Image (cartoon, rainbow, N blue to C red; front, side, top):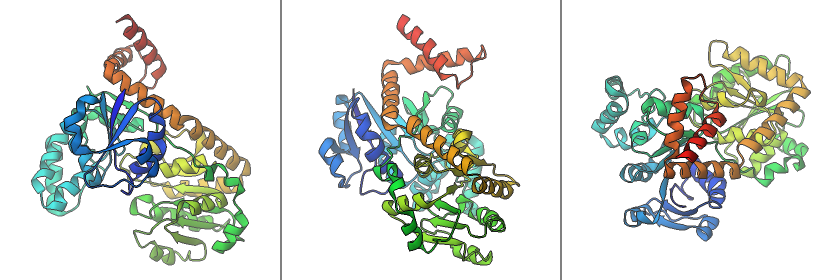
Length: 432
């Protein structure tokens, strides 16, 4: 099998860049021959990529596409994926939807360039009259519905198959086109050696360097400090948490995009909240090592799978997440979940108090999280799942599986009974 693999690459800054270069390409290339297609004018800087793959300008694909069995397009929600989007429509293949809501991508290609007509037409194509009316209101008011309309229908309609990293993504895909062939394949995660040896970090030295050597528990939040990370409600819950745990510290690791220091000051939390700003990977490992548990809340989301949450879990650290979209699909034994409702602050507080007061709970959740990630998100397992799905698309088998799934539903077999569906489908495929 030979795959034309479309992706951003270093030095382009994208989560998909890291995903491809570190977590998927080194493993998928064990099962298939792969050439990488990149945007025009980009000069790759990853030496491993340069040494192990033929890397081509995406404009070359038209002339050599007959050399490949399939194209694999990695689609994200920003402008650097323009060449991937255009290529996937021109030469259909299998599309990986890393984000299920693509408003940011559409906005960058239309409104930001003064092209309101394109914005309106895409909403109408993807979501009909209701979408068109919503787009008209957005253009008029300047208030845009980033997380209300997926805007993936055109991609879904033109793809042979869709890969999502969550059942949430598969459901949204099928809402767009019930005839689509979509499969959940977990996000791969190669756990770096630095995290595998996290117990060797000198935690006392790290805490002393931060000036928090007398603080416990250490609660950490990683990633950009942005509006959808629920920081106002987290800080409010943490303020109440301090009444019973006055020596605790909340570490905020990442670039501040919302001026959160003002909120920290207004809540009088300056002595109990520490911001580090952007941190390189080696520092993130240090901060993980000193963390008793982590908090990673998100709502709304673009339907993405969080690599930062998976890395926290891969380090064996308990994490509190919002009970929404992909996050809700993490097994309950591996994390604590917070519903986004009027009791959100109270639930966050109870989760923090439970973890702070029970060392056995801390240990159990951390252990479960580590075992889950290392098993279900193992890059080699994920690469095999990719290979099977691609191979089934090429053979037409996924169409059979899709039809069998619909028929079995009439007999009470649920969609998540994947082993039953695939075993029966295999029997049919063998008979054919």
